[in-house]
Amino acid sequence: MNGDQLTSDLHVKTIDESKQGDVFFQDALVQKTDGKKFYIESYGCQMNFSDSEIVASILMDVGYAPTRDLAQSDLILLNTCSIREKAEETVRKRLRTFDKIKEEKPGTIIGVLGCMAERLKKKLLDQEKLVDLVVGPDAYRDLPNLVSSAEGGDKGVNVLLSREETYADISPIRLESNGVTAFISIMRGCDNMCSFCVVPFTRGRERSRDPLTIVAEAQELFDKGYREVTLLGQNVDSYKWTHPQSEELTNFAQLLQLVADVNPLLRIRFSTSHPKDITDEVLYTMRDNKNICNYIHLPVQSGNSRILKLMNRTYDREWYKERVESIYRIIPDCAISSDIITGFCTETEEEHQDSLSIIEFAQYTMSYMFFYSERPGTLAERKYEDDIPETVKKRRLTEVIRLQTQISHRKNQADIGQTFEVLIEGTSKRSEDDFKGRNSQNKMIIFPKQEGLKPGDYVHVKIAEATSATLKGSIVE
Ligand code: SAH
Ligand code: SF4
Ligand code: F3S
Image (tube, rainbow, N blue to C red):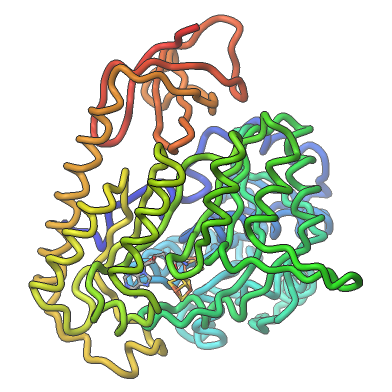
């Protein structure tokens, strides 16, 4: 493995790679424009992609229109990720490709948003000469001010973190949309202190968003033809909203129920669940609502209790296994996926074997797999030595990936002959004659198009072929 992760379309994707959203993008462009254009590229997790849609909304309100053409843009924004060293390197490389644009059009403003902006703050201006703006995840409302000072030649920095900001009142512009599936942020920040993780430092304290605004956003999406929403947060199971007047509490299970009630034709997904917080109440709510998808992303990180303790995950191997057993007991056809880190500080070969055996135990349909990358300022960086040689980390990662690929393949093979309800998301990348869509378990399914069907429709597809990544089949009545 050369990279530090198994690449996936969820974790590393830039907005300009998507062709799907062109129609919607153009619509947005036509609605509001007084000449100035912005270009935005997003890196990292779904939260960042979701934030870029908030940024787009804020900029469009002050007359900026989105463009996919760098050469045409007056403002270039990178919404960045700090999770691993490689994520930051990718952004730095990308930034440096803008020197030509600056040469040809010196007035172009270049801004860094998101987690790298928050982590590096003003330092980023000294390190990367092309950068004019550095704006952290809680400061996007200030972007119009910062952009206008930058137009006057001043460099701008706002990296203030907030305890309240949820952007609840801002209606996101669905930049990259296929018109069928959308993200809804339900909370921001993270109060856990996993020792390897930079997120609590870049995203600040955890805060939940008013459930009524979440339900309203889901309803609005449904009315526009969307048929699936993914509720986003670093740890959705700790979602908690206390109504300011009645002091009534809404927890995550109750929020799920509220969103599921919007319409039986609206599918609900959510990410990420934390093994220490996911409750049986959530599992029962999933079981009792057909439109809440049977899929849980439940990152284990390591299968060994000593390593989990060093990681400060606050659960152990036994606890995790019990959660997995409860999921399969309450929702027998639920799919589970995971995140795994190899070569964390002091991890022995036996402890690495525990990660392999938990992958086998949990029977994940897929995993995001990484080797440990020490991040400045984290607990692990301050307390433990990053003592596993990179060659060992990478060899362990290869073993994890090999096992996960085998399990994914085996599980997909077992789907052959079965029929699933699939929500059509669009045309397959590989063939104009095929649709792509997902089943409840979040597996991508490819099948021949049929007259009269369109993205957003539900169909039943019988599976005929499977690889470790995709299922293929055909529509049945
Ligand atoms: N909130 C989510 C994780 C968000 S970060 C959760 O708690 O599960 C996404 C994933 O990146 C993590 O689950 C972890 O597997 C990985 N990751 C985070 N920090 C890392 C680091 N320093 N090195 C390698 N992988 C890391
Ligand atoms: Fe990072 Fe842990 Fe928070 Fe996830 S729960 S964002 S891994 S600190
Ligand atoms: Fe990366 Fe920040 Fe998300 S560090 S993973 S973009 S919260």
